[in-house]
Length: 258
Ligand SMILES: [Zn+2]
Image 1 (cartoon, helix red, strand yellow):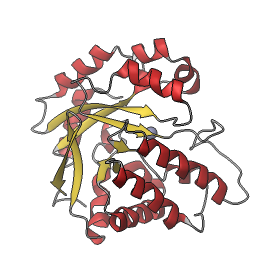
Image 2 (cartoon, helix red, strand yellow):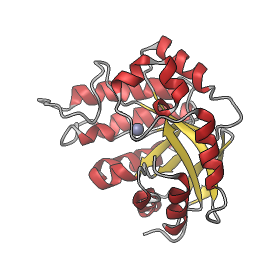
Image 3 (cartoon, protein in one colour):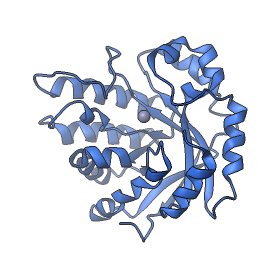
C-alpha cells in the first residue's frame, strides 16, 4: 500500500468523500506469523506491517483532506478450507472495534490456481462455474461485509461464458440473502468493462447493494471506481454501500462523477 496520507489526499482530489483502506491481510505481520499458506502463496507489495502500525498509519491519514477515512481489511476467502478460514478469523479478529469493513476476496479457484494467472481453457464455463460457486460460499459464510471483484476471473479467461448472467445472478442473490454488498471494482472497469456492465445489471436485477471499490494500489487510481457511477445510474441504482464499524450505510452516489 502506498503511503496512507498520500492516498487519502489523492482520493479527495479525485472526488471521493469516504475512503476505506482495506489492506490485504497477508501484509499484517501477525497474519504472516500464523498462516504459512498466505506467506508462500502471495508476493508482498512492500514490507509487512504490524496490525497496530497499520491502524496508526490510517489514523495519521485522517485530517489530510476533508474526507472520511475508514479502515478495514481484505481477506482471502477460501470457503472450502475451514481450518484456514478459522485461523484467519482468529488472527484478524474481524469483530474487533478497529475494523470498519471486512472485504472477502476469492483469489484462487478450487485447485489453488490464481484467478489472474494465465490459463488455457477450451471453454470458459467450467472455471467460471467453480469461481461462482466459491463466491456464493464466501457470501454465505457470514464473514464479510463486501464480496470483492466478482468478475476478476475475466482477467485470465477471455470472452464470456454463455450463462454469465445466470451465474452472476447466483452470486448477487447469495449476497442479498446473506447481507453482503457486491463490489463494483475500478480495476475491473478498466480491464473488463463488459463484465462489470453485466455485474451491475445483475446487482440491479437482484436488488443487491453495490460497494464502490477502486482497488487503488497507487494514489493515481484512488477513486477509480467512480467511473462506474454512470453505469450504476443507467441501471436505476442511485446509492452505494459504505461501512462504519461493520455497519452498513447506504449513501447517494456522488453527483460529480465522470
Ligand atoms: Zn482482491
